[in-house]
Image (cartoon, rainbow, N blue to C red; front, side, top):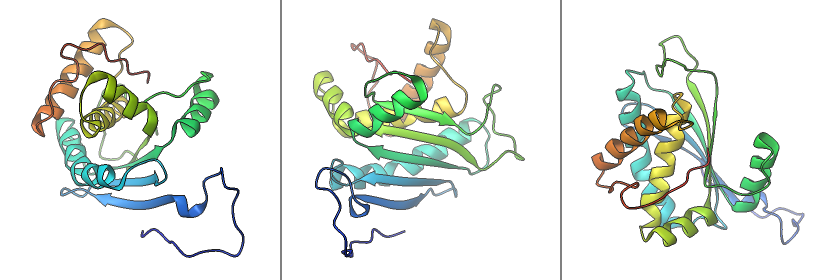
Length: 197
């Protein structure tokens, strides 16, 4: 869906995002998977989003193929830290922004999407200022960090977690593998990256 930039008769408050600040689009992968994206254009740079939009559907296909899953869809929200803080407080009772949150549509303890399962895997939310701040502190490109957080969020939708060392090692090894497939270096190498979700 194209971003509608037509002016309305009533103006929104200057400090609140209006309808014209959020763009909505569907990004289809080569294998037929779909990312339903909503993007706060006030905070997410067009060049970064365009690059991400080009690569994210392909990596989505890689993740689905790894799990022998048919094409599916995911809802992706690229928001600001304020919205992320509100979501984190509402759903996790943590009153701060974080980098990425995932909300699975249903439980997948076997890490497999069965053919009769709903097509929507769930929702991923990523916060702009936190992503930028973390990338700068890690001395890595923001685009690489954004892609890592997307992969991390996708794996949560497949039931992976990092609540103990063994689970974290499994999840991290998959993240490293998927990122290496598109030329992104190991995000855990020589870093102490903390991913909250």
